[in-house]
Image 1 (tube, rainbow over the protein chains, first blue to last red):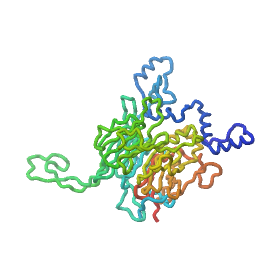
Image 2: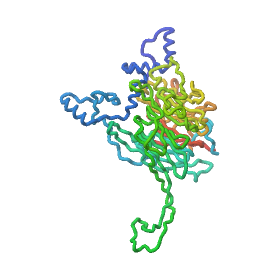
Image 3: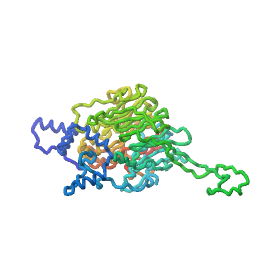
Image 4: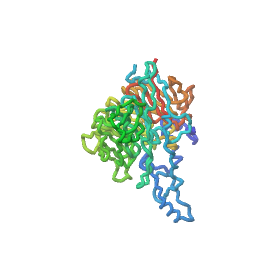
Length: 117
Length: 447
């Protein structure tokens, strides 16, 4: 885990404001964490902890690999690149077609648990 | 000598045993996903990501007053296997989400184990005798020539080496569209509930082709989805009462006598949030990952990302006790969100007499929170403290500023070493703590 410097990079304000600022940061580390997150991901959803998380949670495990779709898409886009499942693998909508590379590896054979060894 | 499981700080914990491989290269299948003692504490079951169940038995015969007995492997079996739902193109993990024991009624032991979609009732029975001297068969199984049979020979039972067999007695399938997160056996010993993200079903242990839906929070329009069910449990004594927790930090208590469909709660437990504290992380960290009734049935405990709260069932507007598990993480929420750790689901448990609660944390630390004197201690499950009967030293995390000797700084914590699952023996001060792929058993220091 990177140890990020929590002090503000911006030039320090003088007087009362400066004191208030650092006091706020001490009193509410969560707010400064939130600011950090928003700075990194400005497009993060307006609804905190809302539908996005929940939909992702409900869809856990779904891998829509349909060989028919996959081959049709390959044929349709002979010259163009094959649409790759987007960054958000959890949300498969529209033209997102999982490729064989996205699918999980074949699970290993069933063996006895090491706890019983 | 064996206390009712009291004491937090006044109890000194010693290493007893560790199960599992030593090597750091952890296969996914070996990740422990659930730990549960049975009602007497004699049996300890673990489930893993590979769908396997391992049951340990307390070796009672060899016990002496000086040291408690050890847990040794009793039975191991493959409970669930990976499946693929072709209709929905859905991969169904074999990971065991929960194991719950049934109270013992006869010589055999029964447990329920569940993955995301299917619950199974397993019978674990012992066989220590076998019939010998069949009339029509030889000992090796071949049939005797009829003409050689001139007298009647009745088989007799003779002792054999103990064999423990596990067989699936019931398979409760196809009742959950979403992923099962909890199962809970009712005090009536006839029914149990299973909960997924949006629904809770009631089953009869004997009937597999039917289950009753008792809670359904699926909105008509999925776009309006704002919360999911995270855990559910039956009251330990009142067979009509159960609770379920949500991703928004609320707990609803339902009474099945009130109506067939318990969408309308009887009680709603929610601590009002200070609006000035609201942030992007508020809802995520308030999501309850576990809810457990006390043995007395008077209280319930909830675990959210940073704290453990104890609620009096008679008071809905706030918890009676709140304990910080790892407050120092509040200033790390951004990184914890980025590496997904903020979504880790920690469990919690009570000791036998409800005086101490325990929950896990990162860096293989776990916390003991003593209720009467409000003492708390942080201990570590590690191979470095694994000499027989070695007393565990309390650990301290330094949040910032000068780090004292023996303290560990927040930035040095290993967030891949999570203790999500812990269990406490129902009567004795014996605890089972699961790290990623190892099971540690600690017990009270006995002088």
